[in-house]
Amino acid sequence: MLEKIDQAASALARARKTVALTGAGISVESGIPPFRGKGGLWEKYDPMKYAHISAFEQRPDEVWKVLFSDLKTVMKKAGPNDGHHGLFRLEKMGKLQTVITQNIDGLHQKAGSSDVIEFHGTFATQSCTICQRGFITEQIDLAEIPPRCDCGGILRPNVVLFGETIGYDQLKRSQILASTCDVMLVVGTSATVEPAASLPVIAKRAGSYIIEINPEKTPLSYHFSDAILLGKAGSIMRKLVSALEDIL
Ligand code: APR
Image 1: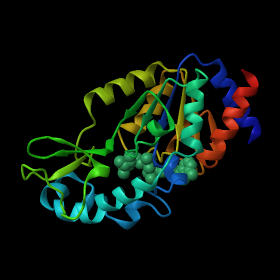
Image 2 (image 1 turned 180 degrees about the vertical axis):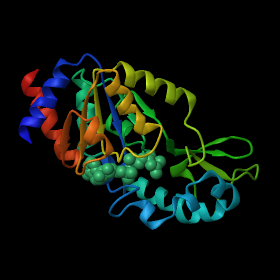
Image 3 (image 1 turned 90 degrees about the horizontal axis):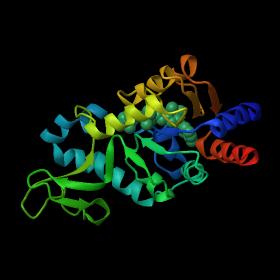
Image 4 (image 1 turned 120 degrees about the vertical axis):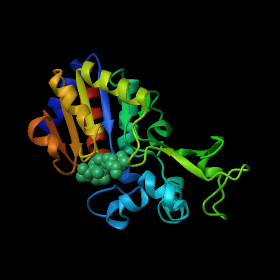
């Protein structure tokens, strides 16, 4: 494994432009469960019943009572871990330009990363479904479910639910970054949900070196990843940053 980490560190050292694509796995060590696999949210809740826009439109009270209140509790307690800190360290070393994250937990920003594309939006803020007024999730009192705006409208988190499209700017910018980077760090994603899962494919086809960090292999591992660093994000990122510091 050390040799693979050294290879990945040399690719980062040579790179002029590196981007990261992160998924729920990078936040597991912060206490936020992943969606799939052992202990995954979708093992607990059917995503089509609780995380699809039509489910929210038909039964907002149930979606808030079951999924959104669970997310609010879990995210309130969570802080960045060594995976997030490692990516910020790379940014400080001038070796990471942008983090494209599928996560809605805001932990990359809390770790200090300054250029984060929230591909699936954010749970940190809410909007009124009638007047669009904005709210901070942490300040919402869930005494009333679903929470409402003064105008009577039901609040919803500013996330991309199943059945909704990715924001045009987030998608466009991410695709441009994927097609122009020298290295893409893919951390903690099952690489199964489109269009995020295509970003490493775009990068590979444009000639980038793909470094994948995950305790398990994913569909990317067999045909696209150049360095597969099997392990948890926190420990692998610590080793990768230290190997890069030895080179630079
Ligand atoms: N460090 C790194 N990776 C980890 C860790 C860890 N400590 N623990 C688990 N993983 C890996 C798992 O092996 C898995 O490959 O993280 C991945 C989590 O996969 P998912 O739960 O599918 O999360 P993600 O890939 O982000 O899902 C994409 O699907 O449901 C939608 O909108 C949701 O953004 C999410 C999207």
